[in-house]
Amino acid sequence: MKKRHLTFFIGMVLLQLGANMAHPVTPMYISTRGLTSSMFGYALAGAMFTQFLAAPLFGKLCNYIPTKRLMTVGGFGYALGQFFFFLAHSDLTMLLARMFTGIPIGCVYTGCLNYVVNTSEDASERGKNLTIYATISTVVSAIGYFLGGMLGEISIETALLSQIAMLAGAAAVFTVFCVDDTPYKHKPSQPLRPRDVNPLQSFIDLKHYATKILVLIFVIVAVTNIGQYTFEQEFNYYIMDHFGLTSKYNGTFKAVIAIVSFIVNMTVSMRLIRRTDTNRTILPVVLFSAVPLGLILLFDNIVPFVIMDVAFAASAAVRTPLLQDLVSRNANSEYSNNAMGFYQSMTSLGTLFGSLFAGLLYAVNDRLPFIFAFGAFCIACAVTVFYVRTYKKSAAKKEG
Image (tube, rainbow, N blue to C red):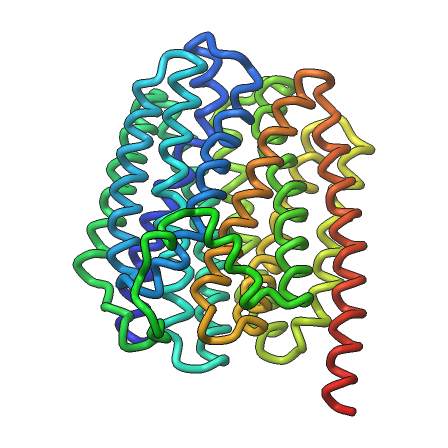
């Protein structure tokens, strides 16, 4: 592994640890401060809304600014936003804190994803690095859950303050050790214009590079993330509210997920990206993701719940690098940064609606979010079938 990637991945480990340390203690944080129970979904939805708006803009800025600079600003901004979250004592202040945090989250993650793509010399290296990136995102995120859960047993404040320190540490690594990726990426033919700073312009620019294939990929990304985050937000709160489990158990389940996800990514994901046409193999991966969501509807005790949670997380560990690889493969080099920024935006959109629906549906019935998540993946499966058919027709025309 090249030094520029090794140091970056060290920073990513710190970022992912910090980004997930608050999740296992958030339900108890909401409960102990007397906030509305459905805020567990609304707060994340607020962050994802602002990230959804900001991510395409940061993708465009990656064309003009060294991505390490965006990663640094985003990392420190993320830490500041979580400090505001730490100070929140009402529904409104919590929501405002999370909405602020969504902007630097979009900045740091869009920068990180583009750094991987820009500094990889060929398709093979890019596929390998995207798999490592996705592995860190999945595995270290689960470890962050575990660490946050353990620290939450000391106190909620301990977990949140540790998170802030970890995020600031990641930003420091990015600024000191990562390289300037300017020599590795396409140089725009014209300078950055004032209108380009308008976040909506990034959506208008889709017409320059968004083929039918890319649009379908973005739809799959958005819908699968709606289902994933509806399930995850529901699961985290449900096991505390329904089964009476503390943050320690939530963290332990995530530690198991970390181990399983690492094994799956280092074997299945690597093999699929290197040895198969991911335009075709994405279908069985999305289909498999729907299975544990359907099965969990049949149970209401903790053991099968945890088994299905782990199985679903394993499928997500495979699905994420494949979708990232599909975006990078199908976007031309001139708009690669824009496409990866829009990928991050679609991830945010899915997380936004998933978190929002988790909160709204939970207030009606505590099982409804599980049903909705399964329905979202059924829709994603249908879109993926259409995507594969469209790809096969396109490939046949090129061969003919």
